[in-house]
Length: 369
Image 1 (cartoon, rainbow, N blue to C red):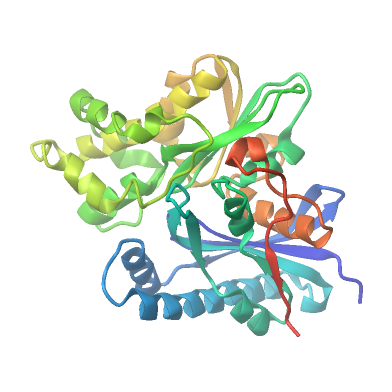
Image 2 (image 1 turned 90 degrees about the vertical axis):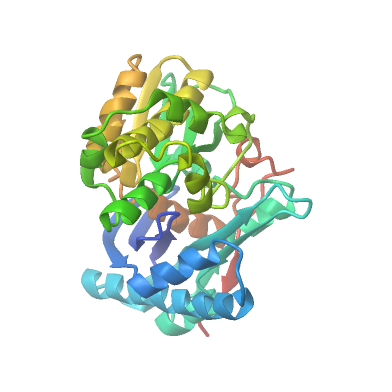
């Protein structure tokens, strides 16, 4: 039986679900064959959140959640194959991002850590797994993130078109495609949905603010917004990347200590503007005008899209649907693409984006047999 397909697995900073895609490639260009979203069980979500902050008995909990996530990723793959009618023997490899629980590239000995044991995924699916994509870039002095700009370049670049690809997951990142021979650039701008989700979960016991309706009902407090935007991360030059370690629940609590008098919806509105302002500021630094295409969960936040449009009047703003890929599946397709690049011994990073000393083949292979 001919092996034709790749599978991409992605679980982002929001930690709400696993996205799984079945992809066929023609050269570097993907065709999405099937997709599936596997919900994150509540207990696993809570266990992951605990691991994102230093605490006791971390090693035992880390080992167990690594295996647990491996089984969940495998379940997502098996469900995807069942839905598509494709047999496992037709799949070349699975590209698994894993679930990041700690991203610390700027330490003296920087590292990044993802859960989702690839040996378990391979054993439970019967398919070879390519994983640990970020480690090689960090070993070469890079940030290990973001990795999707290389994929964006191959898929979305168009000559003479200045394009920004904006991915808004828990953390937001941008890719600048200048439309000429200039270097492609990309980096994390700061929080995407993570702080808004944290506040929504705390106050409303809901996983997220659907369509940004709660934020839209509030009024942003300019003093609180200015304080949030004074975080040193926003003034750093690129390459740079971040995560829940920096924009954490505890950091949000510290910031809110002087604003307990505010209406809860006003706080949510302010957090939404923090995301929008930090994104818009970085986009304008790179180019005053152009085309902006949004992907990730933030693309479905109506209030966020509306506020971005008001901050970037010189940009034509759409989702990546306009370019032929649903915003929900861009990142998971990117990790199928990275698996394909590994399989054919092709580099997967952009040194100008991550700061690595050179382009490199990313990942390691874990055999099913």
